[in-house]
Structure formats: C-alpha cells, structure tokens
Image 1: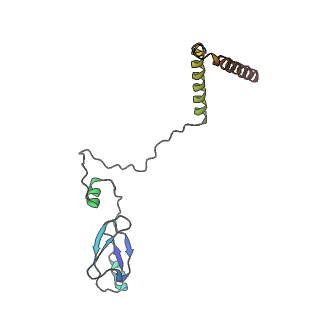
Image 2: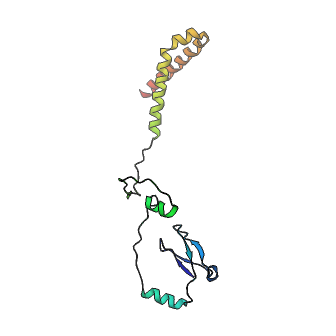
Image 3: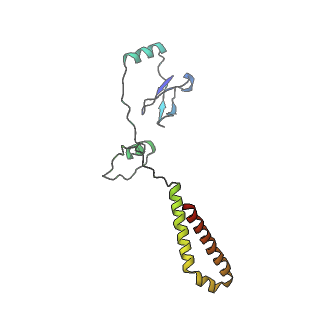
Length: 158
C-alpha cells in the first residue's frame, strides 16, 4: 500500500496487512506529521498507476521554516508570542566571516605579556628585595640572563 503524507507529499510503502479496517495512526518519517490512515478500496495496482499517470499534479515544494509560529502551533500546539514585526529569515545559508587568531598573533601577545612582566618586575624589584631578601640573588641572575640573550640577539642580527 502506498501512503502519501498530507503535509510534505512524501510517499511511503506500507505492507497491505499493516492497516486494518478501523484505521491506524501513522507518522511521516520526513516531516513528523501524524494522521489516521484507513485502508483504500480494493483497486489493482495497474489501475492506480494508470490513474496517477493521467492526473499528474506537480506541486512546487516550499521550504518550511521549522521555527515559524504557525508551524510550531500546527505541529506541537505551542502558542509562541508573535511580534508584529516578525519576519521570516530567508538568508539561512549565509556564511559568517570567520576570523582566525593565527600563530603570529599568539607570538605578538606572548612578547607583549613578557614585556609587561619585565616592566612590572623592574618597577617592583626594590620592594620585592626589601620584603624578601633571599630573592635578590635570583632577580640579579634573571637580569644577567636577559642581558646575555639581548647581546646574543644583537650579535645574531649584525
């Protein structure tokens, strides 16, 4: 038996014995529409195909907006508060421009962070040494390493 969905016109093949004389509740696998299907009169398959070939109806399928208030009301019984300025968004396939945060951006942020860290350390160096005298050796060693790196880069560039 061939079933046609009333909503989206999709066709389904169902075994003949699946639908009894009292009818059966069926659901479209495509759009989810539910209806009670009763068995058709006993017409041969050949006659059905002949009738369909004579009465071809071409319907233009329209895309349904699954979030429109009308569809939600019909399908799920939801009453969504509708604004008077409600407009259907027809630009569903608009791609948003994606901005990448690349490798060089991370390098620049790393250098800015390190420069800020060195600046804070040089500003608070005397307070840190005054409060924690044992850190004087480590801070002096840190500045020596920074000077060595600075001279090495200067020689590499020249």
